[in-house]
Length: 551
Image 1 (spheres, rainbow, N blue to C red):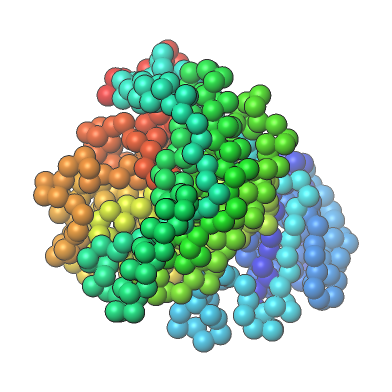
Image 2 (cartoon, helix red, strand yellow; image 1 turned 60 degrees about the horizontal axis):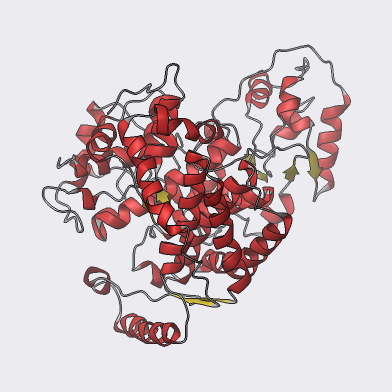
């Protein structure tokens, strides 16, 4: 049994921490408790009786106790404080035990139902033993997007002080956004999205599935004839909202903020249905919501005058009535719609990122906590330890990049919101598949990278035309030989490079080389633009400007 805890972060409690002497408590256990980061997801129930006082971050939280034993254990722990002053500790990386109970989600564990979205105890005994924590002073970080707030604040500097590729990104935005100001929002009352599977996807489907997709295409054509929007909801309208928002932040021109608000409000006022509730419907909802919620977060916390309480109420009603229910359907989505991939598809990364971005916008701590668990579980099943994704080798190279983009986006959002306490960039899951034997010798001789970093480096190497050992013998689809710029799907590589090199001090030479070759990143589906938001902003804010040269 384990104790499942809610997200808890008390920075004020950490600053005013006290570390009492604890007679009779195991020293290693006491020290481990006090060294834990303030964000607690999984916590051993055996720890409670052994502690004479709770760790500082825990003491500031409120307990929702489903069993008297836990309450009495905590009361006993709090009864004998012998405080000694201590200095505030910097947040540390989560211990290995942070996500340890996720190992129980293994598909071969008969006590659990395999669902990477759900780490809720399945047995009555586990449910009865769960203790949940909630912290009254958790503070969301705003503006909370894939880019940290300090880089968002530096966007106005990029046009004048950024490197050439980042300045080109601003210029491209301006060239597009200026004429687009006169184009009205193309909001529709309904969205209905069809999906036409590629031949290699159809090869993995049953005849019944293929027939269902053909029927869906017919229904989508009829819906379009009746005025429903399709893929343009996410690919055009939601992208327009974010592009105008980024143009406003980079140039200061109010008209672009107004246009972004106009687009979001038009859709909030017009849309009344979203479908289908299967096939690509949830995925399209995720692509659109990730873009729209990011734009709304930047507009609200960037001080856009047009973002009023009325606009926000309408926007939240639109999202919570139409889009979020589509995404929550994926909690129990049949595996048949993952094109037969046992490890799943890129869908989860996009859905997690969309739900995270909206949770940050509306400051929904419970949703943030749930997405943290789901992201950890999904990273462990989607990526092998050497960075290979099942989609890359068994479906196509393009969709493998899609999955990585969603994981990098989710990792970034969680890292910024929890001040590094939830660090999926560094996380190696107990669910992680082992590397292929062909890559074992190469992995032994190379410095170990976290699985997400290994995935970015591996795919960058393939885009450089190399043949990395983990992909040896694989038939890679949707990548040419030699690779071209079109094979690179701008999959949040800039965000990954910034984090691993600037924050972690690691080297990602393949990622750096492919970005140097093919910058600037564009906005593809709901990711990209990192040349502006990460690399360019970081360079521009360095002392003297142009801190990264003119590459």
